[in-house]
Image (cartoon, rainbow, N blue to C red; front, side):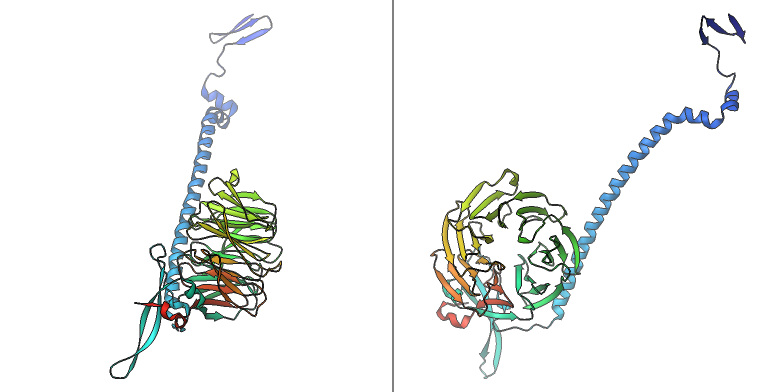
Length: 461
């Protein structure tokens, strides 16, 4: 059956119907029946979808740009804040009156130990003029760090205002600052050049155990000592603000070492893990499991780090530590708990202390055990610390009876000792590039040569 409608036909073939007529006579008729909104939506649906996709992509790009801008602005703000901190510290130092002790650390001038193993030492002396009047002027003395110089060293300055034992301390590598951590839950910043305490910050909530400087002289990383939060903290000493938390350990942190050349550090814990960190990130960058109490240290170049436990020192390449140690050194039959492992400044030597009172000195390239020095063993709650002199010729160490000893690396013999009335080993650090070391117990002491004892060993300039 065919039907006509305005020149168009409706064709019926059996049960199938094919409508070849136009759906509407005009656009006006279509709008009247279905409405403008429906028709426009169908016509432009595809275009609208494309626009939404483009908009979402643009929004994501804007968010990324905003985040990058925020990070850059934060870095600029931090740089500006650092400049202000340094400016404020300099102005504070100029305002403080300067009082020199006859044996104060102000006499120490940092040498260039790579060129000449001599130290320029300053002292004030009185001279008589022709008219009989006395005048005071500064004379300079050139000293080498010899056995005689070491034997003459005495306490030149002491700070006795601690209410607990000093548990850790660290000299900044390029400034005259020293930081200490104490069982009285305080962190103290000292200017060794003027022998003054610049600031005391209390960490009552978390406690404080180990502390190390970052590359910035007023920023430190320290470990807790409260027994419930084992996070490490990046702290600004200038305004007492936490800049970052480093969470990962589940037991007390017993070793902390910062890389001198990069913004990274390494920590060892009683949870038998060693974690590698970047100061700019809260999450650890690497994890190594150990089988004992670990002791860690970076070398001066930041290329190698050592992990010691169970009578062995394992050497890692910091660029591919995940491949395991590239060498393992033995310290003989001493399998007691390790306390401290350190590299000498030139990287050729390393030392390891243990709770049985042994200080082992090794060749850091071959692993050869060069010497072992023995002191009184320490208790389980103490740390036996030792330190190389700046040029690596001598080793100084505490002892379980509180005494301090010094040995010659070349001869392996004891060259000096200083007795103490205390019965726990002091923490001990040699100041970088200086004829001075510091000890910390219930008080903080700076040790320097007594020029009056040296006599003929002093070469006047």
